[in-house]
Image (cartoon, rainbow, N blue to C red; front, side, top):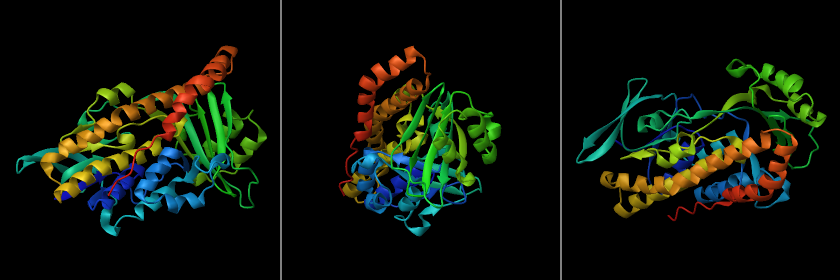
Length: 381
């Protein structure tokens, strides 16, 4: 019988395990891959993410490695995704992450008057847990078991890459962005030699067939979809590390499915993309996953400390408090991200330009950007 089982060793799963560890709660993390999964070269962490990382006790390990964008000491920093995962994993006991462990089925069982989770693995292993947390991505097995509606296609796709300049790129640490004509492109330096770049479009170049062909992805971006963008952008794409180049459809869960859906049932809940997949237009996917971890860790940890152990009868109430604290917050992030992407990528006609420049950026964007200054609080233990 495990106290807590977390499915998925991504940002949400590892961060939740770290939060629980700080309260003295041991968690077993199950990851289907052979090692830490770091799909995507980098991500941008806004102020709300750094507040969460500070609560988790690892912000000091990452912040010195990455300069703030636009020289803002408390502003966003773009970081290597693998560096973030490693920083989280380093806080956990060696045997707390079990790789090559694929979840196939979930059931619940009454045990001493309370509900426990029975977790069936692909290799035939059966694990019992007082608490089960699904951090297994947008196509989550746990979310499906809870009855949450599947994510939907936004109508857009994204290419993300890491450009490497062995002799240095010589660029300032600022974001460069290009909008219009059904596309959005940009880049931001990670350090003196590496640049994170992205390209989104309303019609994917070659659909799913292109996803596993990095050389084809790069060629399509340079010769077709971004051929009229400034030479500096094309040069960044040309320097891509093919091993870090990805193509993916942009998916999201309708916000009303988050507001009215079952985000928990008894001792089972979800976090990160398993709860709230969103488009990347506000760069809040990873940031909100870190928030989830702190909030969930705080609620479970507080119950554990008060009782000296996890009391199954209180688990549903504890998890319910976490769900209600997160439900509206993440639903608004999903809606804000989708709206931001739609407006910025909708076109360059005078009508859309007026909507984007005179209305969206002047009024709505100022409201939406406040979401990135959210304070999820401390763990308080």
